[in-house]
Structures are given as C-alpha cells and as structure tokens.
Length: 375
View 1 (cartoon, rainbow, N blue to C red):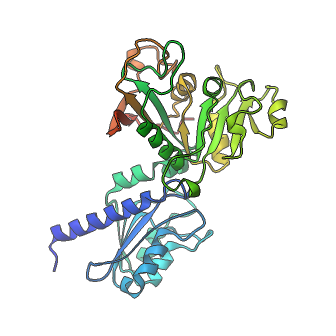
View 2 (view 1 turned 90 degrees about the vertical axis):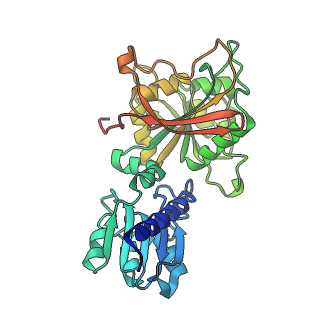
View 3 (view 1 turned 180 degrees about the vertical axis):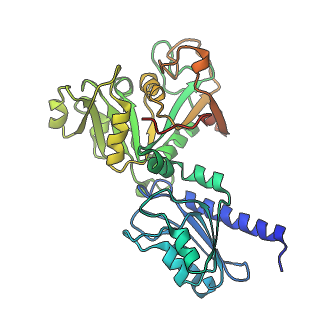
C-alpha cells in the first residue's frame, strides 16, 4: 500500500509525462487545444499514453486508452485538460473513459469552452472519482494560446524581437543582418511552426521583403505553415513579386477600408479591409478578423512601430526577446511609441524563462498584470 507521499509523487510524475506529451502537439492541433493523457493501471503501472496530434483526429484520452486496452479497467487517467463532454469530429472523451472502466480521473485545467465543458460532472455521475488542479500552472502555460482564444475571444499574441544588448534592432545605416546567431534564427522558426499566424508591418516589408514561412526545423516537410499576415495600411508596401506572395504558405494582407488595393487583388493576394486607428490599423479589429479565420496564436515579428501599436492596444500576451552580445550605440530601438509617457505607466513584465541559444540569450516574459477582456 503506497503512502500518501508516494501516491502524490506518482500523480505528479504521471501528469508531468502528460504535459510533455501535450507539448508534442504544438503547431498541429489548432483550433483545438494541446492535450496529453497518461493511464496507469490498477497497480499504478504505466498502461497507456497519448496526445492530441491533429485537429479532427482522436483526442489524447482515446490514444492513451487504445494503448492501455483492458489494463485501463480500474485504473487512473491523468489529463492536462478536463475531458470533453461533447460530440464534434470525435466522440466525448468523458464517455470513452467511463466505457474503458477508468475509476479515477485527475485533470489539470478545467475546460472553459462552453461547448465542451461538463466532462467532470459526467464522470462523477458515473461514479468516477475526479480531481482537478494538479500542476495547473504548468498546464495553463502549455495551453496558453488556446485558453487565451477561448477566454478573451482573440488570438494569443507572442511578440518576438531580436536586438543587441543596448536594445538596437538595426545599425544607424539600417543594416540588421545578422544581429543574432544562426541558432537563434533557427529557434525563431520553431516559434513560427508553433503559431497559426505570423504578422509583420509595412516597415518590415519595405526593409526586408521577408518570406515568413517555416524552414530549417526538424520535420519541416510535415509542418503546418502559419498564415503570413502583412499589416499594409495604405496598400503600398507589398509589391508584385514580394516573397510573401509565393505559394510556400497562405498570405493575408490587411489594409485600411479606404485603401486602393486593386494591385494586390490582381497579384492574387487575399486582402482583408479593416478600420483605421490613430496610427495604422485597428489592432483589435485585426485580431478579431484572424480569430474568425480560426487563428488561435500569433507570432508578432513586425518592427518597432507595429510592436508599439500592439503594446498600446494591450494585445501582447508574451514577449520573447533574443539578445545578442553586440553593441551598436545607435539605430532603431526594438519598441517604438507604445502610448507610454511616464515611468509609472511602464508595462511591467515577469520573466518566465532565460535560455542560452548559441551565443545569444532568449528571454521570455509576460505582463505582470494579466491582459483583461476590456477590448
């Protein structure tokens, strides 16, 4: 008979394994969440494990139960998200767990989706012992994009930038290739592969003619390419022959409602018209349009002006900065006007991770005060 401490350790280890499995679905499950599941048999031994691999495919619980087979009967299932309770492209996981004879379910985070919630109640009604909250913070972080999209009704936004130690993204003559290392640039492609959309502005288009498709990552051939989004307010930055207009990935050009974008349509580009803001386009309208298209996570790669607009709009959920051990002393800063005029208005961040990437340092931080649903 295991002691309480031993049982707690077993539970934590199983959920950590489920969290690691869930992360393997990043970039391929949208608009669904990433979910992992581990099944221990009645003796506490590993019987099955699985994760949600792609939207429309079997959920994590189904993969784990299939692997466990009859050993699931009398066992415990550890799931990173509350088992679903509805029939969509797949059946309800709560019913699958009941049918398999699982007697205990431990899940990390409750499902906020009103169409899918209620799985825990269904399990309890069938006599299954249900527990919530184990490693909830880790599970929230792993599913941040999907949870943000459900709770706030807009995509999760990660602003990524690369800069010198003194905060410059280019030299005084505008040259910027390459401030950071090849290792850091490869890491950015990993972030792109995990996002539903990549966004840049007109300044980046004019300066760099970026391609924005994913390349150079393991398994690139099978990766889901993100939607390439260019915020081109006056429809003057994207020219015929621009690299984002090739067929490597889908592309959307966001322009003002009154912009002359006939040349973009002639070039075969998909265009969305949005209201103007004080400067540029309305950021909330842009995010709403992307959310309607099924975009649940955004990698903001635009320059300082677009980044400033997102920060001013309160629409940045995470900041990922790649800092190179380089000094320039002059040149544009990573962030332009963000509507902050005094130190008391500064957007304070909590650093969640610091990692060496080649010779560079990758810093990840989130707003100290969580983004609200005001917009």
